[in-house]
Picture 1 (cartoon, helix red, strand yellow):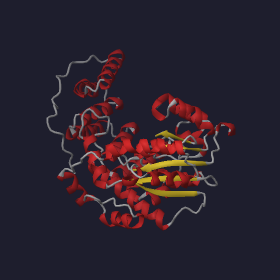
Picture 2 (cartoon, one colour):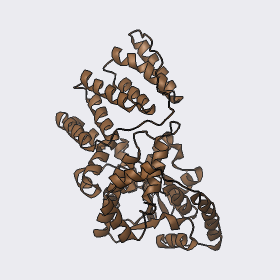
Picture 3 (spheres, rainbow, N blue to C red):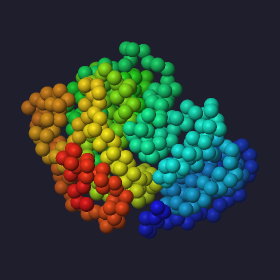
Picture 4 (cartoon, helix red, strand yellow):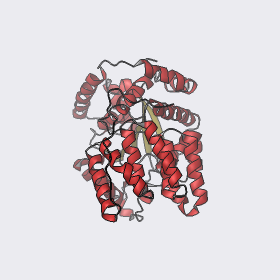
Length: 419
């Protein structure tokens, strides 16, 4: 489905300028484009890189950044045209072909993306592992074949391996009482649930420590891996979290879409206690939040990741939930619980039951802290929400209602409320 640009969005480009052909000029153009991108001046980025792509057609970075600048202006047709031009001028460039495969995935052309990546693997066997680690390739495979089957088609890739780090020493790998993961759709309350759990002194949860397309393993929480992540993503945890993590009785990550990594993670965590708290929120609220972020030019959210992308992800998630319920983990130490968004932040008994299920006792003082947190959260939840008709129409057209209703029946959580 063709994406529509938000209204009242300026999309005209500045006049392009002539550029001299030389290494210094090339570096200068790149520096200017990156500076403009840092200022979110996407019009200037596109204007600078249009002549640069003609002068240096083999510079795939210029093409990719130009396409991204057009996407950020909601000029989706123009971005597609530039992608087609890149394929014409660089039909045999592996980097160009990998970019085009990834661009197809970002546009929800999952089968095209998988075919392009597979063709790249076949043509360049030496690139097979690089393709296997590509998160957009993995996303395409999961979204086409489902998470259960996709996990069988894809090799597990740990975060340490993805970062090309050496195997850590045994003393650098924490050995908590249990690993705890908060999962669910983005915009479904994973952050609030993670914050509430983190109020407990024995629980340390990072904030999106790793990519959800890779395998969480004990070594994913090793000191060298976390140090590498902290250098590039300081938001993964506060200084207090960093200090307590090595000795925390309960250690894990708050990671939306973690369920994509769950099959491989349970394999890697064999013999260790794992608790997954998967939060479910009504689909209309999740979709409306996706839409609001995708159409906001000031948001860092990917404009291509709109309501239709959201629906694809929800369909995959619902089918996998049904798979999990039909075939629960065989390791008795692995537990998956489904959390009702509507109860989580307003029912103190529900919250303390969650903690008790983890084996984390709730003291009277902690109970008071949780009540205060829930009071603040309840005020946010009480804000009036209106679902635009287009959101409801898209859900009615694209959502797999059979799977969604089956999830409601199996979990008792009304994810179809308001639809």
